[in-house]
Image 1 (cartoon, rainbow, N blue to C red):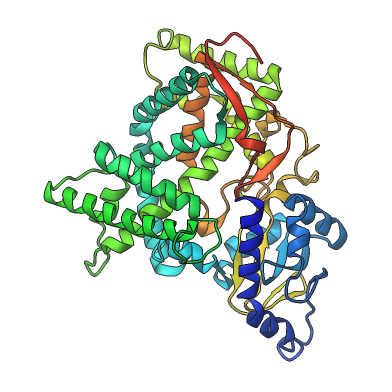
Image 2: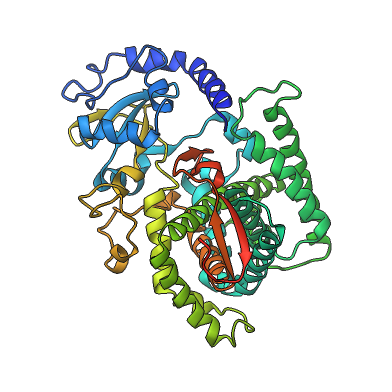
Length: 476
């Protein structure tokens, strides 16, 4: 999201929050919890809070400075909402696991409309539990084992096209195309090209408008995205009808959603299925693509580490008749150094820097009051970059994962009932791409100065511009 769009969206968000601001901040807290006090911190200016401070600098600097000044529990007011920030493993576990019933997931209404109100991550309770089990069963380890050959085919096709392109590519954008293809595979299996192309075209429009200013005026990115979202729903319903007519019993995500029956024999509606499919596509694409982009940057910046990863993967390639045989599931489970590189990349980049929850009642934590209706944000990045849990946290050091992190200190996929159900698929994608990248190709980063941009997930500036070449002779 560019700067202008970001500011417009922020102002819109702020304008819609004025009434809640007055209600939440002016309501006498003493009558509700006379013995408790709000956490320390600053609420900033009336109405706008500290939103401008947040967006005028690296958000991570904003949060770390607050933590340094106020401690692991502090308050602020951003994006039109009074918030309590939590920067300790214990606090994250309190909100996301042990007392999760006191907090509900919360998203801007515009996001909910765009993805679909029935998507599982907008819900809690029985509906959420039921849908989460369906998604998890479609992405079980046994299901992923069967996807290895197809993911490998997609990875090889993408890498070859990048190398043959000969141009400087936006690595993040290319990784999004790869992760989208894998998402389509996991959801629909081998989908007819006419459907795949139509889904790709309309999803791209939705993706472009998702973080734009939410106005329904004709010609705006958001309006175009809403129209494309409607077409996506129609396409999914058409795919559903075709599968039912052919009586296909595929065991992909769509198959699991179609075959679901609750204890009363009720099935999911087509709208519920469409919302959840689009939700999974959103969840699967940007985060995986961002992580892969960071992995390429970290390996590029550490030639010694790159050579060690290359040696590990070359040994696997040699055991597969010089790469003539496909990767096996067991081989993807036996890449120890590469796996630690992935974990350290997830820690360093902290793609999901925090998550939003909302207190459904007044909550006491660590002697402080979290008022009903306030947003609550466990700060994963602050935990990942705390030297108390990770020595010299600014250094990229995969060897730190030779010992398991302390409980609740490593949360790249969240925690609790709303943790990412597709985390094993994401890691499998990364392992397969890295294997083929370092054994068959080389890449050079072009003009990167180390800055970070947010879209909204953190990625290297410019999406890590790079050129890819066939052959593994070092040119970096």
